[in-house]
Length: 377
Image (cartoon, rainbow, N blue to C red; front, side, top):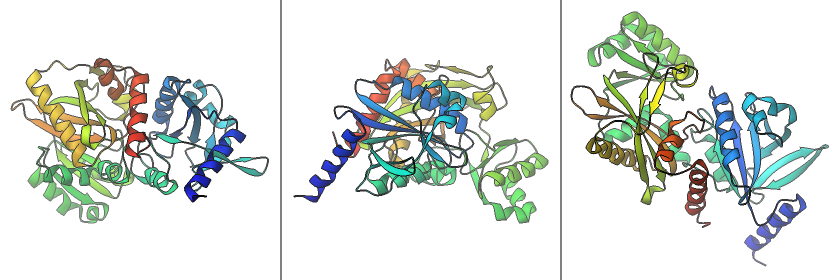
C-alpha cells in the first residue's frame, strides 16, 4: 500500500479516536506567544474563533504563554481575552514530525496525537509573524493561514523591507540603518543621521511589532535616548526621516497571482505618532474607513499596496501602511504587516467590512487561500 495512503489512514483513525468530526476542517487557532503583543493576540484570536463557522470547522484553540508554554484550551472564548485560559489549558505542542501532522497532548502522563488539517496563527510580533512558527508548520507539513517563511521574516525586519521596496522602485522615506554595536561610537552614528535625515526623525527597532520601542526624536538628546531604547528591542535599528502628512492604510487579500486591495482608511493618532499606547489604549485615536481621499489617490495607494505585497512574495493577507505627504501629495510607503490584528478596532477587518466582506467571510477566504496555496483545494 502506498506510504501516503497509510499516513492518511492513520491520520483519520486518530481523528475518529479523538471524536473529531471527519466532515469538518480541523483548525488549530494559535494565540498568545512570547512577544510584547501577547494581549493583543488573545483579543484577535477570540474574535477569529467567535467567527469561525461551527458547521464548517472543528476549532482547537492553542495558547502559548508568555514564557513559551503551549496548551490546548477548551472553554469560554472570553477566558482567552482576559487571560484566564491558562488555568484550564492542557499541555500540548505542535509536532514537527511530518508523518503525524498534529498536536501532541499530554494527558495523565500519556502523550496523545490530535490531528489537525490547518493551522491559523494569530501571533503578532516576535515568534509569530517573523517566520519562526511558519518554519515549524513547514517542517510539520501542515497547511497554515498567511504568509510564508520568507515573506514573514523580511517583512518583520524593517531594514530588509526597505531594501526590497527600493529594488521594486517603491517610494519610501529616507533612512539610516544601524547595528547596536554602532552605539559604541555614538557621536559618529548621530552625525551620520543628522547629516542624512535631520530632525525630527523616527528611531525604530528593525524587528518589533505594533510601534513598540519607537521614538520621535526632535533633537540630539532625544535621538541618543531613542537609539538606546530601540537597541533594547533589537540589535538592528532603523532611523527614518519624519514625513508630514496623512497616515493611510490598505488591506491586501489573496495569493501572489491574484492579490486584491481593499478601500483605504486613515489613522488619526491621539499622540504625536501612532505608537502602541495610542493604538490600543487611547480612545482618542480614531480610524476613518473609507478615508476621505480622492479616487485617483486611493487607486494609487491600492495599486502600490499590491505591488509591495508581491515584492515580498506575500500570501494570504497583509496590511500596508503609507503616508500621503502634505505639500507634495506623494504616496510614501511606510511598513507592511503580515499578520495584522483582528481586534474590534483593527484596521484590516474594518477595511474589508467597508468593502462588504463580513468577518466570517474574511476568515473563510483566508482559510481557502491557505488550502489553495498548499494545493488542497
